[in-house]
Image (cartoon, rainbow, N blue to C red; front, top):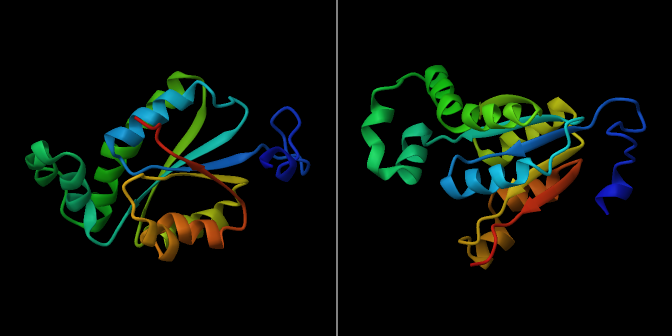
Length: 170
């Protein structure tokens, strides 16, 4: 169990550091609403990091997928890669960070560029996290879950505990 894997006493690990948790977000309205519902259950003595991965197709495709009716907003933002990361942070991650801070939680925001699974694993190694939280979209086919995708890659290659959060059934 998670409790057995992470020897926690008052939010501290046996090595004396506070627990570090990486929460991966994709900016979708369903994920954001589920995330906000879960914030009340989060402990204030844990250090959280929200990670959004800007994949190779860029923020425009992510934004188009999530907010089809508001495409012109993204076109007015930024064009180069660094600015695109900043735009992704402002649009997808900072509102969730603000929400967490309003609830007394310590959080920081990171946007990485590249393939999602690879970048999540890189962040886990570099940040020495104790736990990673990923969402599982019900829309993924059984074949994709079995043979590929970000969730499968992280589950099979992470050197830390992995928590999968699924949306509620209708």
